[in-house]
Image 1: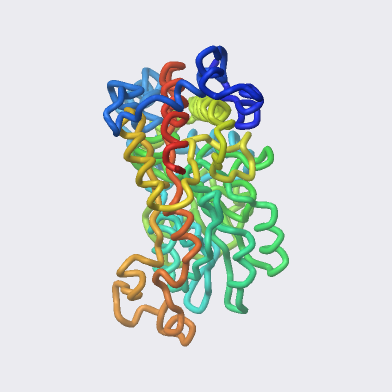
Image 2: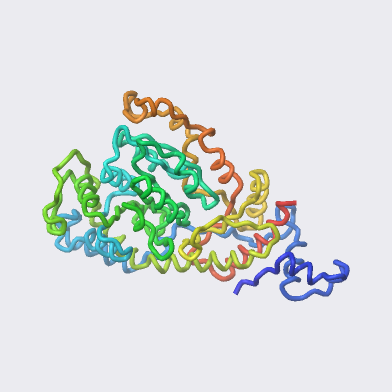
Length: 454
C-alpha cells in the first residue's frame, strides 16, 4: 500500500507547541516522511532524482496482446475471407454483438475509425446545412470536421475543470437552428451527463457521445456511449483497446441504426441486419464505404475480452496515487463527475498558472516521473484553419449562411478553456505499473508540488 500523506492540519498538530527543528529531529511515521520529502533537494536543482529511469507508459491495449488476438487473426487467415460480408463466421459481427452486449445497448456497428464513426453518426442524426451543433472547445479535430463535412455549423462551448464540456455553458449557445450537442468524454473522464441530458430534452436536441478517449468509462453505473441518442468509439492505437484503427457506433434507436448502417455501407442493409431491422423502413440515400474488415474485427473481439481488466487496473493505480498525495496542502485535482466510473488515465493537478505548471513539469521530469499537460485534444477555436473557416471548397454551406458568416472563432471564443488547459498537468497512469512505480509517482508529486506554489 502507498503511504498516505498527513494533511497540513495533521502535520501542524504533530508539531504542536514544540519547535519545528526539534520535532523534525525526532519525528517518525508518516509525518516524518512528509517532512523528509519536503526537505529533499529537487533533482532539477541538483538533488537525487526519485527515479533513475523515467516512468513511461505506452498504449494500453497492445500491452495485453497475446494468444487470444493471435488466434482470432489466424481464424481469419485460415478462412481466407477477410471481407466481413463474405465470412461464414464474421469476426466483425461477433465483435459488434459482443460490444453491444457488453455496453448494454441494442445496436453496435463496426466502422473503419473513430472519425468515420463520427461522420456516420452525423448522417444518422441527419445533420446538414442550416443545422447548428454545439461541441466543446477542447476536443479532437474530428468532432469539428464531422459537423462541417455534413454542412452544419459548429458552435463552441467552454469546458470546465473536468476537461469536458461545461453543462452550464450549453444553454446560452442554443438557437432555433441548434439540432444536436456533441458530448466528449475526454482523457478517461466521463462528462456530467445528467444536466446535459436535461438541457437536451428540454430543447428537443439530439445528444451524440464521443467516447473515443473513454472506452470502458461509466457515468452513474451506465457505460458512456449508452446515455445519449447515439455514441461513437475509436480503437486507434492510443485508445483503451486497439486494433491500430477502427471505430464503432452505438445506439438503442432502430432508425438511427438503420441510417448508420446504410451510410457506412453504400446505402445497403445486409444479413443478419436485414432480418433484425425487418427489411428496413428507410429508402436508400447517398452514402460511403466505412466497412470494418475481418482482421480489425478479429483483434477487437479479442481485445474486448480484456477491456475491463485494463480499466480496473487503471482505476486502481490512479486511486492509489491520488490517495497518497491527497493530503498535500493546496493540492487540487481534476474534477470528475464520477470517480468510480472514471478510467483514471492520469493524476491531473491544478497548478494555478501556466508559469507554475511549467515549473512543475520541468521539476517532475527531472525526478524521472514526467508530468504533461492535458492531451489527446486541441483548443479547436484557436486553430488557424478553423479560425479562418477554411473548407474544401469556398462555397461550402457551413459558412455561407448569415449565421455562418457572423460566427467568430479564435481565442475570444474560449478564454476559460484556454485558462483551464493552460494550468493543469498530470502524471499518466499505466495498467501494468508496479507498486514501486506508483510509490515513485506519489513521492515525486509530494516532493515537487509544494515547491511550485512557493
